[in-house]
Amino acid sequence: MRASTSNDNQLIGDLLWELRQFGYASDDGMIRLNHRVTDSREKIMNALEMNIAVARGEALAASLLASAALQAVFMFVPPQNREELLSRITAFVDDTLNRSGPAKGDAQDEPNTQMRETARFQAMQNLDAIARSFKGPSTQR
Image (cartoon, rainbow, N blue to C red; front, side, top):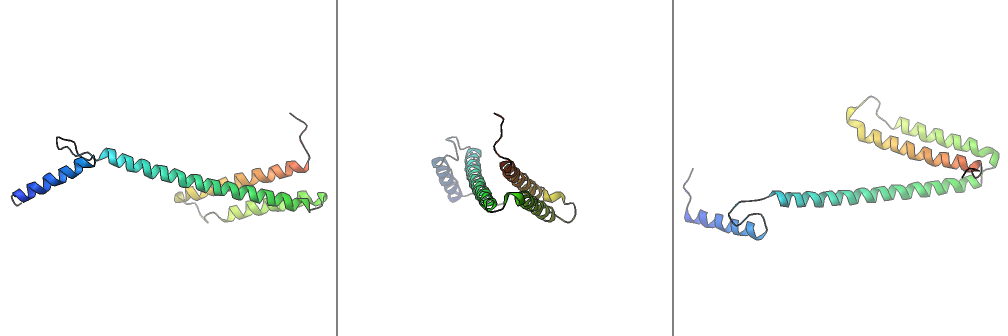
């Protein structure tokens, strides 16, 4: 290990001065990084939350438009055939989601499984609401 020189000491002093200017070091020379790392983590988390909110908004818009499109289609289907068409759509959604999963159990597939089950739940809720609309308005309040 080589001995430090006055040039090294000057570089260290300059570095500490810079660190103090940006809040990374206190006046006694203690270097603090945690608060800046925390700030960066918070910014990353805020950006992640915004991206998730955008993705959820896009998914909600797609769901609403698909539901509106299905309801429009059912307006052109004779009333006696609506339940049969709805049954076929339900079977298609269910079968497609079943086949999109892994061929064998995969412990690393949890996010994809969650996505498929969320899609199934949302789709079935929309299809159930359409089925209820065929029966007319509810008499309960």
